[in-house]
Image (cartoon, rainbow, N blue to C red; front, side, top):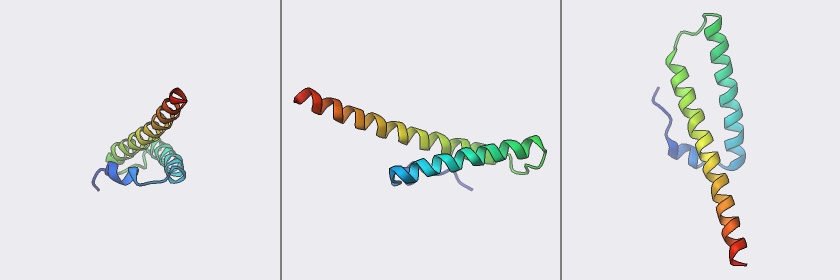
Amino acid sequence: MALPKIEEVRQLSDEELAEEIIATKRELFDLRFQQATRQLENTHEFKHTRHRMAQLLTIERERQLNINQSSSTSAEEA
């Protein structure tokens, strides 16, 4: 399985992004639980899931900053 592409994440809507973040957090929890009970066979899934979480949170933060910048520039112009 290849690492997920950032372009795929950028195409998600805000609602889909929030749902994906929740699902990825749940998946990380499940992976940690499997590792603790020694049921995890593919340890590289941690890397992929953490990478995916970083992408999701980065895009979410970019959108927050973009909204804040656009609202602050319009407030300064008024």
